Each structure stands twice: as structure tokens, then as C-alpha cells.
Amino acid sequence: MEVLKRKQPKSNNSIMMIQPYISENTGWWSFDDERTGLVAEPFVAGMSEMIDVLVKDLRNPGNGFVLVFAKTPFPSARKMVLMAEEDGGAWYRDVETRMGGWLCPALFLYFDSAPEEVYVAAFPKR
Image (tube, rainbow, N blue to C red; front, side):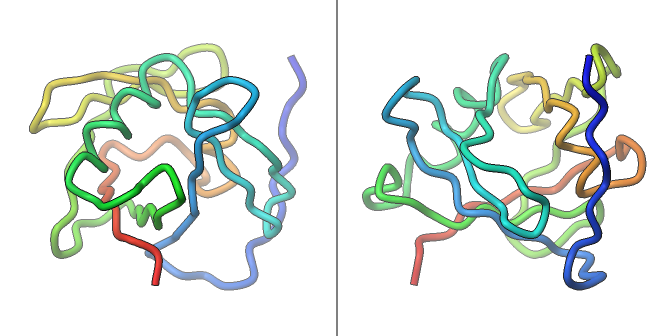
């Protein structure tokens, strides 16, 4: 398995943002992040389904939205808790829905280690 090399983000923000979109090739939620070198990085193993629930109240989320995430709480965020680390990534469970999903090794481009808790929120693009 190829190990992802950590690229330094442009800032040391505690709250990070990406803009997921539906991949035309897979139908999964994916994202690009030029700060880390990720292109069409898919959310797999339950994470796409968790995102579907997270964005259900947004208008036209398939046209893109902003996913905000951090390892500390922030207003309107949902809490995900670490269940286990596996295959270079980590399994998380949404406390509210009890749904679970796996975050791939790209997680470590944003965090030095798998946080015990990750807080997420979805917002429409402006």
C-alpha cells in the first residue's frame, strides 16, 4: 500500500473545508484539494451514504457544497467518533444517525493521527 506523504496545508487552521461533488464516474461523493494534491478522491465504505444524510436539507447538493470539518466542536457540527483504525484509514460513527463509514489514508493529510472525534457540517456554496 502506498503511503501518502503529508503535504503542508497553506495554514494551520483548526477548521478545514473541502467542496465535495458527485463523481460522474462512480456516483460517489468525491473531492479535490490542491493544498494536499488530492484529485477526485472518493468517499467510500459508507462515507458517501453518510454525506447523503448530512446534505439532505441542502438545496441541490449535487451541484456542490462546502463540507467543514475539525477535531474540535463548532456551531452546527455533527459529531463522529472513532471506532477503529484499519487499512491505513479509520472507521467513524455519526453519533446522531449511528451510521458508520471509513475515512481512507487521506485523513492523515489533514490530521497527524486519527482524531477520537471529528466534527462535520455541510453548507451551501456561496
